[in-house]
Length: 259
Image (cartoon, rainbow, N blue to C red; front, top):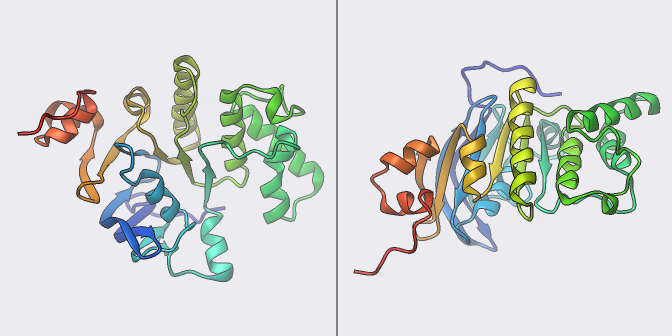
């Protein structure tokens, strides 16, 4: 479980982060915070580095410079048991869902509990059922991933990400591949979990309907500048931003004509 913290303090702080691969920067000198209980969205055009930023925020790749603080602890510098303790404070849902196809939904959700806790089997079974119930899948605990819809697979992946009761959930393109109705249902689930469990969400997406439905605050990345070009309420950015690229994105306008 995550340690208690002062509600006035950010739950995530990104400081001077340069992110990339093989010493090739994709994003440079990023600075932003995420507040507890926020639904925080990372957005931008194709190739701007949204998923790259998320992968660095969860420690999948080392930063080229700067640091990521989770609950006040520096994930980028931590090693061993300290690093594992920090990583237990968040759960991750990858774009594909990444469920194990040979395991039932319940078995998928139980995996983190079996790996990271010493709970008895009965307790693990109960927690897995409870997590699946939270996402509306309590009637499908014995189903394999290929026996349910894409939207249900995303829900099951969220249930697994919540198995250890993290205070933060990272979701990578949760609406990808979903029809508009299923996507709207997933948006409603995210808002409900945010309100009822006070979970902080960090979500990568470019789906405008989802952004307007779920986001408390956004940052917009831009591959031209390799940085953040906008931050705030998405509706205010759409209506009030003085940056033409930001207005273009939020209004779904075509590429600006060359001068």
